[in-house]
Image (cartoon, rainbow, N blue to C red; front, top):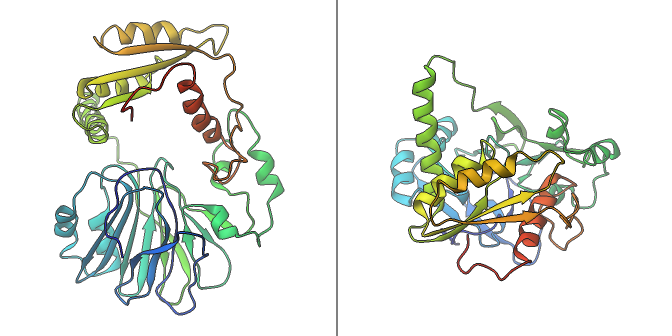
Amino acid sequence: MPDTHEPGGEGEFVVLPDCEGALAPTAPGTEVLAAHPSGRPLVVGVLHGDRLLVVRTPGGTVVVLGFCPVDRRLLESRSAGARTPAEMQKAASGLPGSHHVVVSSGGTVRAWGTLAHTRRLFYTSGPPPVPASNRADILAGGATALDETALALRLLLPGVPHPLSDTTVWRGVRALPGDHFLELTPDGRARTGRRWTPPRPELARAQTAVLLREALCGAVHARIETGAVVSCDLSGGLDSTPVAYLAWQRASRLVALTLTGLTSEDDDTGAAVRAAGHMPGADHRLIGADGLPHVLEGLFDTRPATTSPSRVCKAHASWSWRASPGPPVPGCT
């Protein structure tokens, strides 16, 4: 049973309760990625190069799937004194990166994704034993009817408004909110609970600015190996600009991409050009929006990026399309 894998794209997996009769869908390449303390399968799936970290302690098992710049010793140290599912959850919460976390203790499972929904978790509303997965279509398995109303909502542009976006296109398959955890009980039932609440607005703006800068620096620098060649968006907006700047500070070479001509009044391009002027040596590329992939590009690929129509389809296709006008940049991440 593997304990670690190298970083890469998100895999496909199923989380099983610690009870008899819990079965996971089978597919080519599927393997048991982690086991309950009882020995039953806990996480079953295919990694597709994603990173896997499994830690076993006297209190149970902790599984991290995805990008997390935390080594085994630190996670073992954090989890060493945990004995209950709640304590195991607390020990594994707040880890940096973008990943799923699954803990198993005393026959109970708790699992969650990310607050920003970059890593989603889904579960079924049918009779126990209830499985969970990072892909809704795996749980649907072809035997669950489509929710035509939810499917139609996915065709809205620029996107499905909240809270309608928290549904799935499959009847009987539910999406876990990012601020909740999923608990699978020893009898195979599922319940959810809140794992995060917004902090009270008690700090001054100057204090929160320092905390935000530290969090952004830590997140970007953890993603970039020293001396790496990195590509990123530089739209000129308030989100991509600081991320690009922090990447430029650490990377040996930054390739910053700006799409132009998205609207008739494109003010962002000028902002992006000015921002790039503060990053000496950055390779700033202006790319016209003509021929930009369709919003649902790639949806019918053999292994689409999402389980239903969404803007993520366009995002994945756009990165491939942007690389096509010229030769690829060696070593870009």
